Image (tube, rainbow, N blue to C red):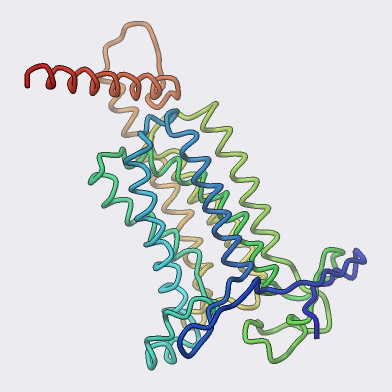
Length: 323
C-alpha cells in the first residue's frame, strides 16, 4: 500500500515515502529518511545564518566553527538520550543497549538536543575564547530555523500529530489510521482527521525566528537577551502544542515536554532580567561622555571585532620583526 497523507477538508492527498534509500549494514539496514535529511538541511540553514551574521555579533568564524561542530554532535547525542530516557520502551533499550544506536529507526527528543548543545557550548566557548552569551544569542536564532525545517520530517514520518479535529487543515494518512503504527499516539479516532501539530510548531518557530531576527537588528541591548527570549518563546509554544499531541513522553502521569516547557518559560524570564540588570549595572560604571551606546549595539560589536583582528595582525607582524 502506498504511503499517503490526506487533508480531507482541503481536498488534498499527498503520496510520499519516508525513506529516500537504504543500504545493508551488518545484520540490519541503514536508511536515509526525509526526517534526517530535513534535520540536516535545517542545521545547514542555521549555520549559514550564524556565520553570515557572526561579525555583527562580534564573533570570529574560525573558533565559532569549532564550537558549532562539537555542539552539533552533542546535540544529536542529547536528543537521542532524552528520547530513550523518557520513552515507554526505555526498559527495552536498557535490556539491549545496542538498540540505542539505531537512530535510523526513529526516536529523537528536541529538548534533549537543545540542552545538549547549550551545555556543551558552556565548555567549548571558553575553550575557544568565544563570548558565550553572544554565541548563545546567535545560536538561538539558528535553532529556530533548524526546528522550523526539521519538524517537516514528522510530516513524512506521519508522527507528532495531535488529537481529532474538525478544522479544515485536519490531516489523516496511511500510517495515522493504521492501528499497528509503532509511532501512533493514544486517545484519538484514527478514522477522523487529527491536528497537524508538527505544522503548528514549525510555524511557531518561523514566527519566532522573524521576531528574534528583528530584535537582533533593532533592539539588541544586552548579551543573553535573544537566548532568554528564545527559551521563553519556544517553551510557551511547545506547552500549548504539546497539550494537543497524542504521542507525548510521560514522567509518571505528567507530559515531560509540558513540564520542561513551563520550566523553560520561568527560567527564561529569570535569565532575561538577570542578564539585563547585570549589563545595566556594568553601564553605570562607564564614563558619562554624553553618548549613549547600547552594550550590545551591532555596530559596536562589528568595530570591536575589526579592532581585535587588526590588533592581532599588528602583534603578529611585530613578533615576526623581533624574530
